[in-house]
Length: 512
Image 1: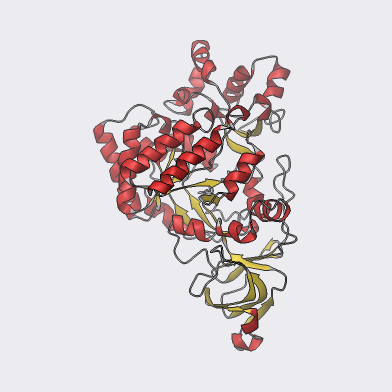
Image 2: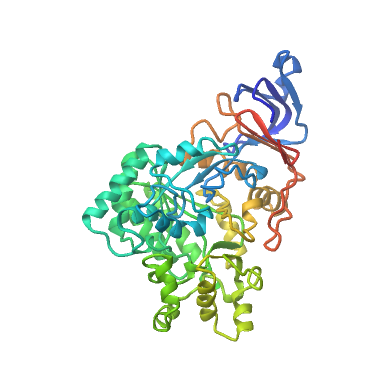
C-alpha cells in the first residue's frame, strides 16, 4: 500500500464532487490531504512534489472524490475489511440503516442477533454495548470511514424485547435516553425499519418523540417506510408529518414504487416530497440503480408473525392453526415469479436461484405455503431478490435533485444482490455513459458531496484543498460491470485506483 506523502495526480479530468463542470488539471496530495488543485494551464510539474514525491499521469482518466455509500448494511463486514465496496470506489459508508444496528446490545444478545443477522449477516460473537464501543471497533477498518446510525429496531429490542406492542411511557423515555446517549457517543442519527418487526409496531407518536431528539441534535432520521407498494403514498405522508411535527431532517430510504400494479403511485409520492421540500421541510431520499431489491424472506410475512422473535415464528409456522392465520397476510411486492431465493441457512440445493413460483409449482403447493415451508425448513434464515420496479420510474428517481445514489448492499451467505459489487460502476457506465440519464458531474455529486452534507461527514466528498485525500481515479470510457443477478461476485472494470487518506488502496483492480 502506497504511504501518504507528496503525490501529484497529473493531467486528469477533475470532477470535484460539487456538481460543477469537469476540468482538466492536477491534484497535489500531502500527508493524506489535498494540498492544492490546479487547472491544466497552471499544472504542476514533477518538481513541485519535492525530491521524495511521486507523479502519477492521469491523462484521459477522471479524478473524483472517494464515493460515499450513504445506505449500507456492511456494519460487520467493514470490521472484517471486506473489499467488495472498496473495489468499486467506496471509501466511506453510512451503516445502521433500516432500523438495524449492532448496538446497543440487548440483555439477551441472541434476541438482537435473531432480529438483525438476516440483514447484517454476522457471526454469533458480536456484542457492542454502546455506540462508542462499536465506533471504536469501526475506526480500525482498513477499507472505509464509518458513519453509523443507531437502529430504531435495535433500541426497541433493548427496552422491550422483540415485541411489536405499543410501548409504555417509561419504555419510550428509556428509548429516548438511549438515542441521546448514542448521539453523545458519535452516532450520526437514527433509522427506522417499519416493515420489520418490532419496528412495524411503532406508532407515529413514538417515532415523532425520537425524531424530536434528532431535530434538537441536528442529525438525520432515515426511514425504511411502512410500505413501498399499495401504501406508498400514505407511508410517505406519515414520514413527512413526523418531519413537520418534529422539525427533523428526513431521509427516505430506497424510494421506489414496488410492484407493477403500484408503479403509478410513484409520481404522487414524489410530488408530496417536493411539496414538503418547498414548504421548508428538510427532506431527501436515496435510490439504488437496480430494478430489483433484496431483503429477507420473513419481510413478506405479516410482521405480527415475528412477534417474540425467530423461535416464536418457527413455532407458529409449525402449528396448523397459526399457519392459517399467517397465510392471508403473505404479500410480496413482486409477483411470485419475481421473488428469487439468493441464500438459505441450510440445504440450499434446489432453492438458491429459483423463484417461489417455480418452487411452489415443483412442490405442488400454493406460493404462500411454499414460503412458510421454506422458512420452517431453513430456520427462517432465507434471503431473496424481488424483481418489482419500473425502468422509467427508476430513471426519474435517479435524476431527481433530492436523490442520493446508494448500494443498499446486503451481504449473504449465498448469492448476494449484484449491487454489493457493482452499483457505482453501473451508475457511471450504464446510467451515465450509455443511457445518459445523468451527467457525469451530477452522478458523482450524488455519491460524494451530497451525502457528505446530509450526514455531516466532515472533510470528505470533494476534490478541494484541505479535504481528506479520498479519491477514485477511473476511465470514463471503460468503467462498467459484468455482474448479474445470477453471477454477482464480479469485480468492476475501468477503475484505475482508489485512495484512502492519501494511501493507494486499490491499484488496477487489485487491493494493494
